[in-house]
Length: 313
Image (cartoon, rainbow, N blue to C red; front, side):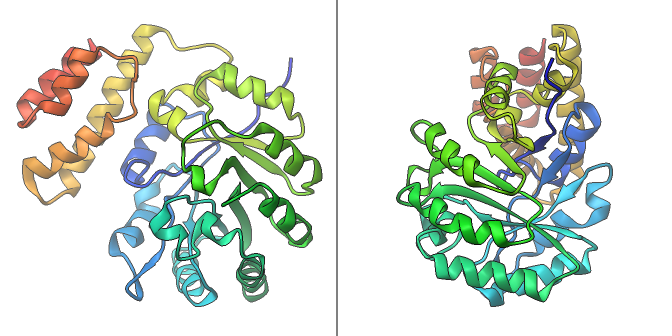
């Protein structure tokens, strides 16, 4: 029997925040490390929310890797200075974000068609910070998979800890199929530990990918873990949770996140309600449709809580 690979929790803006990560690690687990949604410079400074999100006291019990996104060295250096101040030794550089607003400004996967910009960014990070360890999260390209293959000889020369590859193009965003042939071409030539990320929703999906690519160093999951927070645990232990165990953990998970956001948010019931509706956007896609609809239509915390109790049985 093949041994299990480490599972890493992919970041998703607005979802995998510090409160969510801590609750997930405590109640479900099975995850080797959690990556932060990318920190970026806006209007010349880093958002206070991003600073708060990566403080170690807000991430107790979580193996956290902070991620940055930047279109140039100056902005990158500002973010790295924050990571160093907060005590981090590992940094992930995002070359994968597909959102057009950022990509058209040469952030994330929007930088992949410009190899000289990628070279300048990564060379500066490694040269200026020999005491830090860097990884890269990327896509096959923005326009075509040849973009990542063209970069690979350069990437292979760098002292990266690993590369995380999502085998779509930036212009696809999250639409269409993952390109496993494109991934295979990259996998065959990549000399770094390689982590696969993309469209893994079940334990069988993870096993299929790990069997097809036996040299993988790990698996990264985002939306699959948001839909089933037990996915990593079920993969690691080799069997699914019982329905009763799953329901109990989901109740604890929701109660924990609800209480923590209740303490943090200062906008009253309305802000808390908006935040908690977000919590259910990916979670339990096969859950009772009537109860899920009631959650999204609720306009008071009492009706929201009643709908949640109905959904969780």
